Image 1 (cartoon, rainbow, N blue to C red):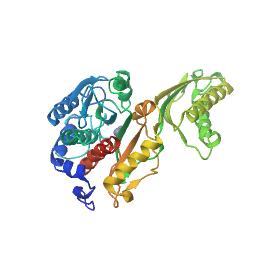
Image 2: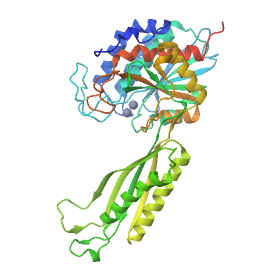
Image 3: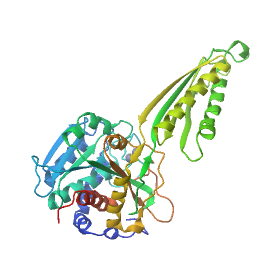
Image 4: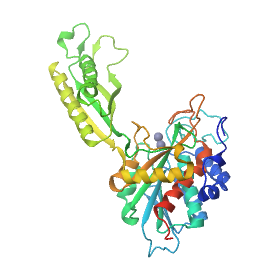
Length: 413
Ligand SMILES: [Zn+2]
Ligand SMILES: [Zn+2]
């Protein structure tokens, strides 16, 4: 616990939270074990094994591994329900993968695998969902079936899509799906959600500018792709500034440029490559940016007698919460932490999230759970080598998952 934080036992109230708080130490130990053993997307063999082992101990009703390569799905039936008569299904998703990052924390549970690190808190997300699985299996105070989805490869591998393509929602036809992600920028125990776009679409762009190489002393004999690239870099800034309405959002960033060789002072290279990213919240905006980018690159290059090939790769779609499910999730959160600790119109992020693939095919919501300090110096952000998941929120996240099931699939009274 960091100075200034309320004790974890005071973060929320209610029966589920009190029940789960009793096994907070076990959840913490489980989370730290995953932290010490990070694995990249689709390589979560140790993690998936530990998850499956723990789920069996929890007493889940069924368990399948190898969904979307290394994904795990467990099922807990509510009171009176069975595989033959599952009732309505509600899905809860946690991501399991780590990052190619070298950890700079000096903690007892520091990564034991050099160059790999749980720098996004997916170790914590996995432990939170495990806590919910144990609680739901022990209590079963709901009418229907909870589907617990432990997905691989969120960090750029589209593990959610792999699970869907592997029949996730055919085998377990969830009516609604929910996921949580920790937020170091949000105060400890505060829960944030937005009806509508929550995370941006993530696109990768690569522009190859082809000119004609030559001598730096005789540029008139060459077509300089470095000069063309400079004009393209400037021109693409006009897309957001001059094509996107002031009431919409988009980001276009050129983040890398490769041309020539630092040792070649007087060699004009034949080509230059620019790499960057586009972030948008809806498909119309995404299409507008792609179209303008292609037109600008082609037009600018042509004006210099060069050419430009644009590769535009749509990696993750925007994460868009359906409105009723976002309101429902906020209500569940308020029942746990109180209305004053729920942000119902949280500012969306320009980061990406592959839960978006699940929200494209099922109604649901993506929820942020605050793990930061309310005051003082800011905590380390996600993907920082000093980042760590805050174990204080494990029972809260687990209780939020449980609340979504109990309030989403209520027993008849
Ligand atoms: Zn991440
Ligand atoms: Zn993440």
